[in-house]
Image (cartoon, rainbow, N blue to C red; front, side):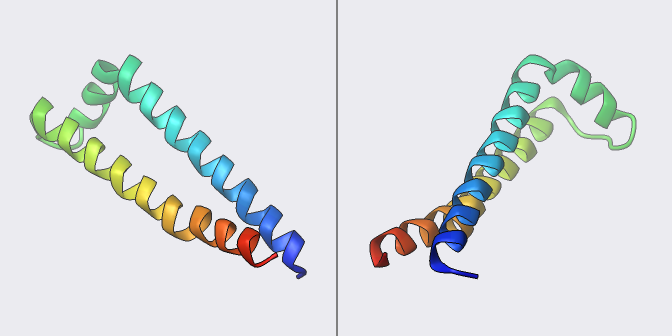
Length: 80
């Protein structure tokens, strides 16, 4: 795999992962009650716990995307 193809792969991975994060946020924002009812069937958690879990999970996902996709992409752009 060449440097350019690796860089392109990381760019696409970053864009796709941010797209997933955006869809997740929009679903959480506009379908919150539906998502809570769906998960409430399986787990006994309060609305506050549900919100905190999703907020933390989105933050961890975002940090993962930054560290595993965006930073290596920027490093390869600097090296190239």
